[in-house]
Length: 330
Image (cartoon, rainbow, N blue to C red; front, side, top):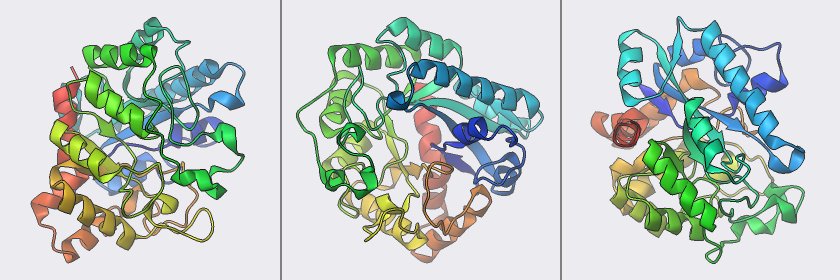
């Protein structure tokens, strides 16, 4: 079963642990594990914590350097995606595709020329915010308000008031013009509906689940799921235990049965065509029933046992995301 995963934080781990490499490591994502898991494409996020760094853009450039060094070092096995045709070309060459993303699109000094330069450097998807307000918009809950967001009641706080900034509206319109995929994971509800209002193409929630099943603000409401489906977008099932089901303690276990509950619910309220995968591998600290990229067949098996057809499982695992990439990427 081919796999497309819309989100991982492996590049940050490689930056923080330079002794490790992408070919083989003790993380959830490496080339060997992806080959075993029959990966078609992996999104690699460049995550920058803007409040932890005096010049966060400098960190983003370091992360980008790690990404491109690893791509060059492992060019016989993995290749970048700059346009949709690259995915087809890489598959024919028996190479895994790597799509570069930003997690927190605010690393641009509120300057659209910086956004265009990220495009020139290979970025093809951007999560507009992380867990802080930035020049683009706002999250539902902000780490400005507390030190450990997993222990905060603000996890349930929904922001329907603060939409995208004027710059944020310009930003998403420029992304759409360039052929970059807009990612609304971490964005607040008001910002989500502004993306819907000011764009025309499909967008994604790369690593978000259903709020009705697990009531945290990082997940999507029923209406958000339905309108994303109507636009042709896709949401990636996040393997983080705290976004799959409620736990008494933070970093709760990540269980396949909980993933299946979300998928069944999303299919019921919106349909199968808006469901994809966004594991958040190497960025989560749960006890993982699916520990790494080599074990994705466990989820496929569970879905089959719950009555999903082969075609439906293929849509979830790669076909739905591939459809969006084909429509948006240039």
